[in-house]
Structures are given as structure tokens and as C-alpha cells.
Image: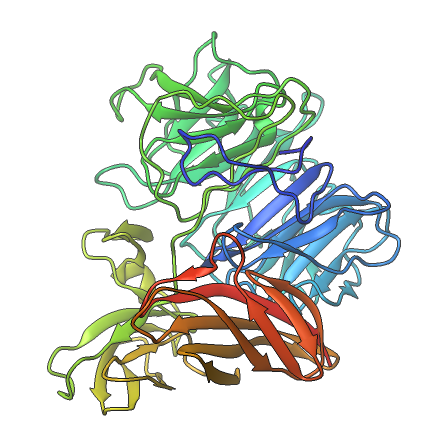
Length: 542
């Protein structure tokens, strides 16, 4: 994605229709998504007189807007987004500071004591934790990136790559070193307080994780490194106790260790940025427990003849397992960001019975997710939704854990209450929403809901605004547009807002005084009866 700004792949067997153009960075250097809200993403890239800096999306990359850039920043650097999507930690180039934003990229505060240029990562389970690595020192934040403290861990290599494991709080794997210093793979299970080196890995340059193997609960680990004197790409299905090479001497691809990502939905699938030959993915073509090299069926997703680097993110997506070749629509670069189909959990009620059947869910640090049925540990994907295993859900501290939801409904108002059924959780949460006609649905997003919402109705179209983030000088809000009529329409509507529009995504807008007139874009202007559009939002200055 470096040369031409990047692409979004909804299907890795098909060529994307276009690259990212708004905003278009000449070179993207880092990208991240919120593990618990994967439609929220952030990317950073090279800065010119007109473009570059930081871009954000809450629609899994369907549309982006450009955030503010701190003074003095000259290049993208690397970026991390908290697991719940609330805070961003950005380590850009050209400045002596690393910054944190609590306003989704609208304002920034320098972080004291964290060296410029450090590699930053977010914990994939606990939204309050961030990590950083600079030189031979590892840093830990437990307050959403506002402050960092150095770890007491010693004998670490010089910074290269590290990765937090999805679904496991405080589980970090670190790859790095050189031939003249310590070199290899390390792991921490206590949020970076201590690290243990893998004795069976001689060298490691990058590490990532994908779906667990059948019969296993921990995610599959992938590394680019050296095991038993052989350089290559390796996979472990038993937390690094044993490794199997999954490429061969004919599939090396130069410096492909800079960008790798396992697929959380498809076991054995690995995506590789080749630094010149585009983005490839490989699927397992051999037995999982084989001690010999297992061949990898590879597919070129897009090709490049001039790309100098690449980054890729694989989030919650429905990517078909295929080994077909999808040639690039560009002759210069490649990238893949799979789209997210995860939406906030919701409960629908069509009767007035109370607790006739209790729907168990997982209150994961304030956000509700379905409980897995077959997945026994970590995160899973069942019935076309991301889910959390019972064992992982109940491992959280109180007041989070497994909850049982019961619903009651009247003709106009639907309310849902959540009562804990976990031995380790005793919290409750409720949220109410006004609904039209006889349809009732209530979306539960956290145990304490503080954001405000307003709505307006015109010509059978209802627009509902909900403030997602707010600070002293501004706010960002999401907008849901619903067609309440019986006919297919080309929608337009308006809202009364506070302040002056700063940016908008998912719609075109004209502000007159406090009225914000909205119209659909080419791809979402048509709205079927009873349907809603939820990927619209804006930010405004007060």
C-alpha cells in the first residue's frame, strides 16, 4: 500500500475498484484497528504540502477522514489504536515526542518520558493498556496511553517487531535482535513486566497470530525467522513449543518480514507483504502435526514493481479460502485491508414476556459480544459473528464477565437489562431506545452509556445522531438514517447540531446555521423500505 495509498479488499480473489483517495497518502507506514470494535481503524503516512499525516475510519475502511497532525511532524511513523477504539498513540517522524489522542485524532498531547520513534502497540483485550519498545527497553501504559513506565525486563534485543495476542490480555510476543547481539523470539504473559526467550528459535524478525488449529484454543503463531539453522516462515500451533516451516526455498520473496498477518477466521492462512512483489496469502496444504516442512498454497493478491514497503491489517472479515490469483489493478503497489463485518451486539424483542429465555452474552470490558458455542478458549467466529469463549470471558476482573439479558417491550419503548450470571461478575447495564411502529430493537454497547443522541424525521426518513466522543472544543458523532416509508427512496435529511462542521464521512453535507443537511453518496444514496444506513458520522468544533 506504500506507493499509491492503499486498497480495501472485501474479497482477496477480486481486484479493488480503486485505491484510497480521500485522504491519499503517498506512502502509508502503519495501520491498526480496534480489536473490540474492528470497524474503527487508523492509518498514518508520508506528509507532503497537501496530504499525509493520519487518517481514520469507523466503517472498516469504506470511507476515511483526515485527522489533525501535531506541529513538526514530517512522516507517518507508527500508530496504535486501543482495543475499544477510544485512544490513539502515535509515534510520528520529525518530532521529539510521541502523542496520545483521546478525541479520535482531533487533538493531541505529548507523552512525557517515552522516547521518540518507539514502536507502539495496543493490548488486544484490555482497552486501558498500550505498550512501546525502544532500544532495549520495553514500556507499559495502564491508563490508555496517557503515561508510560519502563519495564524491569532485561536482556531484550534492540527494537524490531512485537505483537500482542488477540483475546489474551497482557500476552506479548517480541521478535528482534541482530547477528552481533542477542537475537530471537521472546514472550511475556504479564503485560511486559518479564519476558522469556524461546530456546528453539534462533532468529526472529516478525511475529503474528491467526486462528487456532482444530483441537487447540490458543491462536496459531507465525514468525519470519530461523529455526534449526533454516531461514523461512514458520508456524506453531502449540504456543511456540514446536515449529513447522510453511514456505520453501522457491518462495522467499525478499524482505517479506516487514508485513505479515495471520487470518483470525481461517486456520493456516497467512498474509505476507513482499516489499516489491505485492501482497500474497498462503493456505495450509499439509497436516497440522507434521514435523516436516508443510507446503503453502500461495496466491498473489496484487502485484507491484516499485513498492518500497507495505503494511497490512486483517480484521474480522469473511474472506473465502481460495488459492486463485487476483492480479492488481495497479502496476506500482499493493496492500490488503480486509473489511470488517462486526457490528455492535443487539437484542431484538417481539413479545412482552420477561426472561422467558435468557440470552447469555459476554460483557467484554463494557462491550457486549456473543458467547461462542464451540470455541472453548479465546475469540472465535460463529454464525457469521465474532464471539468470545466462556473461559476467556470469565477470566476478566469484576464487574465484567458472562451476562444474561432479558427484555420487555411496549408498543413504543424497548428496554433491555443485563444481569450478571458469572461467578466473577456482578454488574448490570441497561439502555432504552424509542422505536417506530411495532418493530423493537435495543442495542447494548456498554455497562454505562453516557453518550447523548438526538433524532429528526422528514418525509419518512429518520436521522438519529449519537455523540461518540466529546471534548472541550468539539465532538464526533455517528448518524443512523432509516427509511420508515414503504417505498425505495433516494434519501436526504437534516439534523440540528451544535457547533461548526469539521469533517464528515458516509454522506455529503451543507450546514446552514445549526441545521446540517445530509444527502447520500453514490454508493449509499438509495435506501430500501425499513432499512438503515449506519456508517455515517461527522466531527464538529463547538
